Image (cartoon, rainbow, N blue to C red; front, side, top):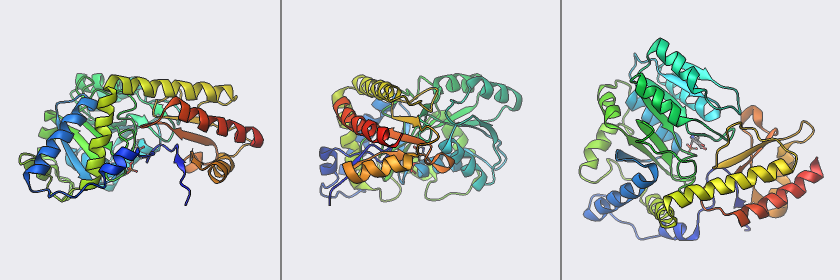
Length: 358
Ligand SMILES: Cc1ncc(COP(=O)(O)O)c(C=O)c1O
């Protein structure tokens, strides 16, 4: 079976040395070897998130991390703010509503970033305890101004919860410096591992709110995670193989150098955006992320045709738009183990096929 090269915004192509790690012999999660391993992986991750906070590893995809944040931080009487600029921002709204919490919503147009001044205006009026937002909005390719959101939340003594699933490791986001109380990530994007692990990094201020939360939860109850972390363990059997892979992915970033890693993502982002513009196409995001590039199709071109042809002829997979954006945009993922030469090949093919359909 011939495999596709993934240029999707997660999961991404997993490097061979990371894959190899996932095939290591199993260890038992209730013994010292695991304790040392958990400490090592936490130390490595903290360097990439720029944080000293406690980090909990969950066996789930990124959405599990989002759900954990929601049910542990909120209480039934809370009216949080959800600031959304795309499908993943909308997931915060959906999550809140599933747990019968009705958020105040700031909904920005697709392609635009969350306007921090709007968040400040609403926060000033309603004094919400918590603001939920997204670092990299993968549905539109926007990177939001999380730094500004952090300053605003600090000013109004509100907790900031950020979905960093797609952006962490590709778009610079220093948790502690930017006053992010809860930061959520996943294994399968810029950190280069297979899907299956989410993590959630939690500030002491957020821990205080967690203690008062009355929303129902069990598997994702962070009280259990906190207690077990004292023993260097997770409360339930974790996806140890994925953790092995994640550790290798983190080590690769540290070996490259954290700064260098972000620089490489910035260079690739810049390169792909220039190529897309040269093709005569417009970018969807006003404020583009370095994790992926999202371009609009002209009205007479359907991205579904282009993606299908490239997949079938060239074994390269780009991503379509989600929901009502299907066919209208094309998304190129370049978070993780990507280089300019790899992107050059992929974009050359995209250009050729696009010219045929346009
Ligand atoms: C920004 C963002 N948040 C959350 C998720 C959800 O992650 P998962 O599909 O791993 O549950 C994704 C996945 O694409 C994402 O890009």
